[in-house]
Image (tube, rainbow, N blue to C red; front, side, top):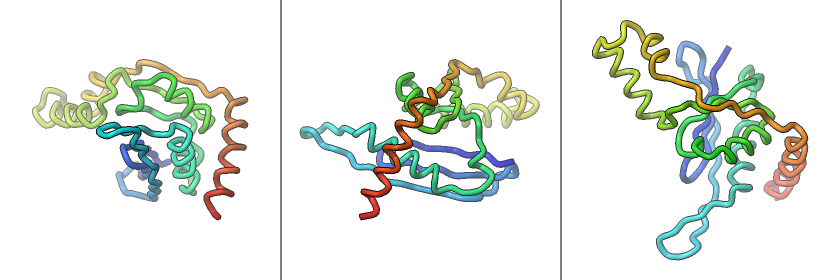
Length: 158
């Protein structure tokens, strides 16, 4: 078994697969373009971002391609529509945590264990990590996105 983390950041998408021992097994990164509509503003093309997320995910080969469930954290996880599109593209169920600030929550979990507020990391996680929403993929939309992704791969290879 392995675990996959997907970081949809400001300038690109990174996917990293880890063993249960915490060793990095594989990594993939794809940039996406930031469109400056006017001075001081930046916009993203959601279709471009999701093509890159899908491409990043597809580039990872191995046992982590059999993942059936994703947990979402971070800024993008706040939007239900964003998560629905992600679930549809990947054809996978996504669970959003109640606290979406993953880095801060992770630091607090470690602090709770380190300061002996919790006896174990499991206790810390059980106390602090709560599921907020489950997003199921619409597989009819996955077919649509898969066709668009195939077109994207052809165009991007030129």
